[in-house]
Length: 333
Image 1 (tube, rainbow, N blue to C red):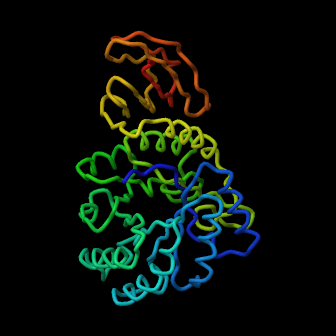
Image 2 (image 1 turned 135 degrees about the vertical axis):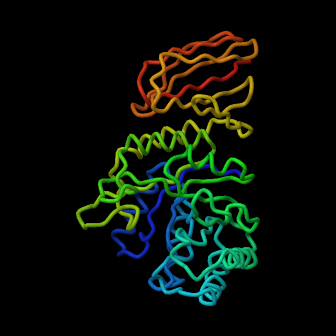
């Protein structure tokens, strides 16, 4: 399984009136995001309504990643969870634009054991003939990450580097569904600067730990994008559009390499390195003899600056000495 595209979080957008829902759909359609994490919300959303919203997302090319169980939403024990999963999954599994997340907060269900979560994951798989992707959001070190019942890992961690270090032996794709949202709320998780959000997204993408976007600014109705949808107002979104553009041109066989800055590459053919907070004056690469196209990407200013054609084996790429720079090297015929 290869996880591509780019996700955002709007957990309860589908619970609002038609006007706000239409605004959410229009925002998603013009955004870089092709997947949205949203809560199934057992006690507040009928299945008919949920199906309609999933179909609306499909019409604009967006996948609904449905968080099936959340604390305080009417499911309090394992038996109720089994009944709910058995009711929801067969109905929604008919839609091609669906992913499943068992829960984004296992700790909110203290009576559930690891065995219970695996049993529920197996039930999702049984009830879903389309075999849509399935995860559960856990801390990066959780043993649930290693269970075969899940198609990929979904982790909560403070940084992509932390997530990578704690999941590097996990031999399935891993995404970061929570490492903080752009915003100005009281919580440290909900008050990242846009610069931090952009840096985390690039760092995570190069480490093959795609970061799910979130935004927590209050709008005129006292609501936030990541809880209620509406309109994206943060400064990170446009810059994530550039990241998605860059990632679309990364070869499928590219793999992560850890040196003093994270790098994604195909040996001798392609390299995408993110310098992050480092203000390097230049970067050097040992490559096979040949000609290489070099570009410097300013991830905040959204510029791609050609550096000409450089001759291997020793390639040196000059940098502006500012944070947030990325380098792309491509071997020419």
